[in-house]
Image 1 (cartoon, chains in turn blue, yellow):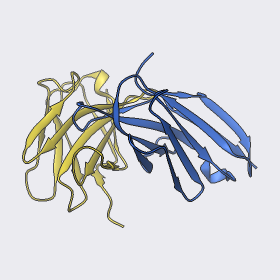
Image 2 (image 1 turned 30 degrees about the vertical axis):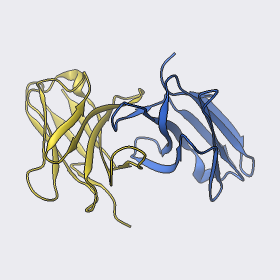
Image 3 (image 1 turned 120 degrees about the vertical axis):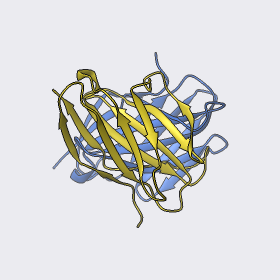
Image 4 (image 1 turned 90 degrees about the vertical axis):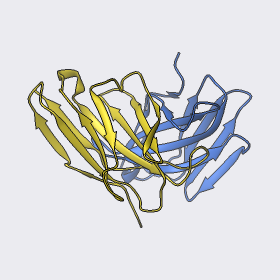
Length: 112
Length: 114
């Protein structure tokens, strides 16, 4: 498998429910960032978590990082129809300069 | 809130033609990047740029590609002789510093090579 794989590939929930997306990676990282992309549009930065952090919150978003398992999760609480988008994790790799390596993404659909 | 801007939003070109994609990074940022996303695929790193030179590039960024910061605000990606497989969304990004910093992305330029 490749650096940065999200799970599940697609997720469909009802408005008001929580959505959890997972990201696994292979190599040691400096940081992990989550981005949102609406269909055919640009990448919107959601949250950055550093390798020495375990959890971060931003509004309805909660991100966790487990470097021992090389995994991260993004939780969106009380989802809204406007949260419908693709969500990507991107890792900054230790010794990898400043490039980001993106995952395959989770397509989230929030239905009314 | 400052943001990265890109022009044009869409470009259609003939195979073999040169294209220049333009970006205006956030004004106090020092690191600039180009990524691309072929339809239905992952976002891929192309190149990073700092202090008027390339700091890192991927295997995709071959001799057909070049980047330039022609003035204090613009950051351009040139593809000298486009190929069909260059069709993709091209994203510019910028960050204040290097590692451990958020990269802010522009809205992208959708390039279609016919």
